[in-house]
Length: 166
Image (cartoon, rainbow, N blue to C red; front, side):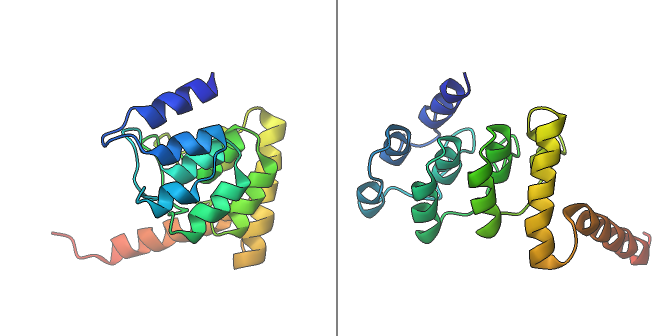
């Protein structure tokens, strides 16, 4: 079912459908599409970019190529799903780890205010993804994702309190 939805999302586009999406889905080489002008950042009607699509199809080699060609790792689709949300939802642990090490932002939330680990199915998987996310994040920034979000919220509140009232 998930792949049917992803396929529809790639095909229903606000621009002419890109061959790049089709090549990713079919496992065909993608560089010829990129070299012939297909955009690595163009999103379809649902906000899916080739990078999000490659993650959904667990195409690790395409993820690397797309990032090298300028894909935006922090892009979110219209639901607010990032590459990490898709990897966690589909239980793609190796992909999730790769994306974390390549700079994916674990603080991004969906339109429903969910962090990536929160869209994983079941309590055990949610805990696994939260641990994976925090392990990588702590090694990069010295704090957990939740601590970082609390710091950001406190800074925003302090900034709002410092604003003169109108």
